[in-house]
Amino acid sequence: MSTYEDLLDISQQLRNIQRSLYLLAWDERTYMPEGAVEGRSESKAELSQLYHKKLTSEKTKKIIDELNKESVQAELDEVQKAAVREMTRDFERKYKVPDELIKEMSKVSTKAQSAWEKARENSDFDLFLPHLEKHVELKKEVAEYIGYENEPYDAFVDEYEPGFTADKIESIFEPMKKDLSSMATEIFSKELEPGEDVFEGKTFSVEKQKQFCKSLAEELGYDYKHGRLDDAVHPFTMGMDDDVRITNRYNEENLKSLFSLTHETGHALYEQGLPSDWYGHPLGRRISMGYHESQSRLWENFVGRSKEFIDYIFPKLCDEFSSLQENTKEGFYKRINRVKPTFIRVEADEVTYNLHIALRFDIELGLFRDEIEPEETKTVWENKMDEYLDIVPEDPANGVLQDIHWSAGQFGYFPTYALGNLYAAQIYDTVEQELDGLREQIADGNFDELRNWLKENIHEHGRKYKAEEMTKRLTGEGLDPGYHIEHLSEKYGPIYEL
Image 1 (cartoon, rainbow, N blue to C red):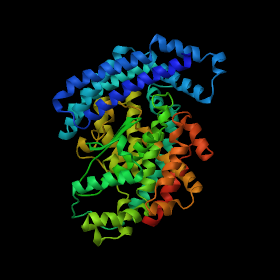
Image 2: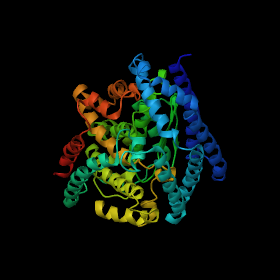
Image 3: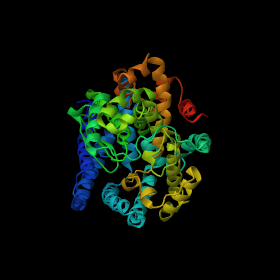
Image 4: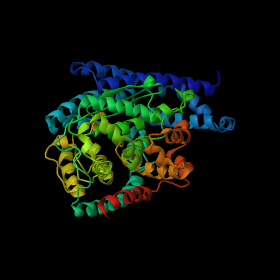
């Protein structure tokens, strides 16, 4: 067996462990009984340590060192070089981190997520604070082992969006915040509530919503032979290769479940669109979390909240929910696209969403720059909400406790949500230029061409290309936040008479 084949064999073994970890995590966030937290934390910790040991073993190091020799590189093709590059990156990010630290972080994460659920349910920040403090402490330690370009937070930005740093994100976010704040202020000054009261005073059967969402995911292209749809407190997509699962949440007072469903289906289509020949291969996974988010936001906002999609789906909704029959497609479209300050990120409109992300980025950056202490996050959160959106949450459940990410130790993840919106706008602009009649297809309920374009141009390449290179290949230029602002102006200008 050649050295390169040895590398592929290790990659496959790592993938098998990761599949098990994902399944345990999915169960933990869906159906795991409360009393199983301690045992689950031990199981996941052992598997996490096993994964880390295999990835950072001397055998793996020897193989990677050999494959990175100039003479060996000269004999590799493009795919092989990319595979070696990505495995080398994975190895180097983990090699210096002690096994015991990996195991400890896994245990802390499992217990923290259980504590977060209770804290959120009771709106009690103090229940979660010790776990947040421990996560930040451990992550700072990890950053020193991994190394970073300029500051500790860079180690985690690079984990989720390879090649990015805190400074780079700041350079994107600062002008973006000004543009979005200006647009939001102008919209708020109109004191308009466009659209009709399509939800007020009505109820929408949760069971019917579940059935409708299940069918909708399939229409968009989700493959239930290799996935399933379940309930969760916080919607998420989890899995890989031939087992990619989505979750959703429902409220009988509205139909927000439709848009969280299109969002999670976008994530799932990316995972299911990865080439099956690369299951277990170093390249058989997403480019970055920003690119993953671009796919979910593209399906949620550019498709799901478009006039054309509402043209297609509204008659179906009226058949299912008779109370909507007194409303119009135009009224429904404007209602679901209202711009209004909200405490909850996942319920935010397109104009204010990235301001929610900027808030979280500010806090994470402050935590890792030692400018904010964990115990101060609740107050800083409230102050930032007041600054960015002119509202202050009445309780932690609607503020600092609303997201699961910090309980899972996922610092550096939040900025990718905003980057995903920026990528999505730029990618969709290209798609519209290349696919004639795309809007008409969506209005007819035909999503095949769009899905296939995304699969052929993004998904099937796995992580062969880095995010910046992929953006240039797709659009002819690097990431440009201007596309996002232009999209919002074109969409919300007519709605709010800007």
